[in-house]
Amino acid sequence: MRLRRLEPDDWECWRDMRLAALSDSPDAFASSLAEEGDYTEARWRDWIRPASQLQVVVEGGAGMVGAWKAEHQPAVELYSMWVHPEWRGRGIGDLLVGEVLDWAAAQGHQRVALWVAEGNVAAERLYRRHGFQMTDERQPHPGYPGVFERAMTLRLDAARTG
Image 1 (tube, rainbow, N blue to C red):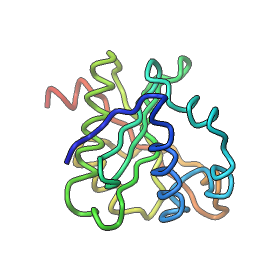
Image 2: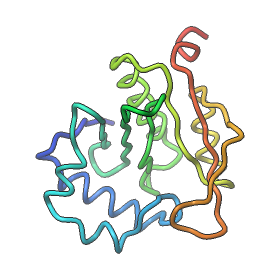
Image 3: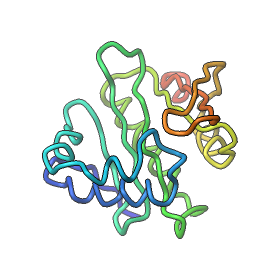
Image 4: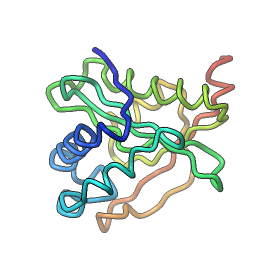
């Protein structure tokens, strides 16, 4: 499988993958298909700014992931992780997580964090395989009342040195 890091001109690819993800797994994301379906081209292009973040797709529509680092945050945030149902269980998630970790390390960042919905056992297993640890941090899911998310973090120097 070939991974592709997206540039602003790839906005349609990111849009199509993101809308497919929202359609397939609406409770996994903080946004909705209805909300993002109305985004303009300018908004999609603005989302993809290589200097401050990363968007990666697996060619052929198999999956996607994003990552970004806000100035005031101590860690890179992995977000928009999604694997097409036909490709689940084939290592696509591992490729995508690995690409985020490689990018974060190359940027000199020390930590990667993410939010995972409670009960999403497959996602937790994927992240744990890469060294992420569950924290005590918990928050209500932004789009689904009654659903909570848990924070997971990974210290890159520890993950790379054992």
